Length: 212
Image (cartoon, rainbow, N blue to C red; front, side, top):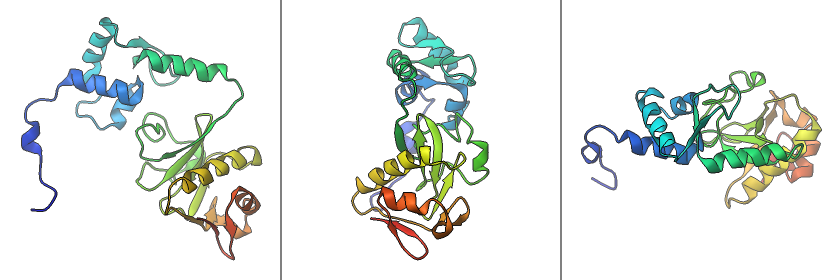
């Protein structure tokens, strides 16, 4: 009844592991053991490893040690490797990016661990966001937007670009708003971040900072 129905009968039999390996390469660019585990694929990395090696033999991907700390058995598309090289050559330039915490393109909490400062506050849940600066997570926006959790020690040098990126992200989506009440576990009105929020475009209230 209605718009939804079960679909198991449409996908009978064993999955096509070659197609799965190609899909992982397209989605992730660089496929690692932890990245596959984060996708929740039955059988984990072992389920696609042989197919990734076969794709390497065919010249469709490369095997190497592209990302430090994620194991030696990594497979990547050629374009992904070139983009990594471009980022390395930029030096001190740090681009701010806002991603949904549960986005497959957001590696923290899956392929990479959350920063220790996050404790148990950061998680890959729907409705939460992560602000990355130069690829490193610096700010976590809890679901509902009432709490901002700094993932590194608060400092104006990263807070300004991170908050600016967050404001641009919200304003680019009509109907979205943030009403921040707490920052780093304390009421936002009593924190040193309030002037930076106002500078970025928030409106200061008695107990919260609002962005429409």
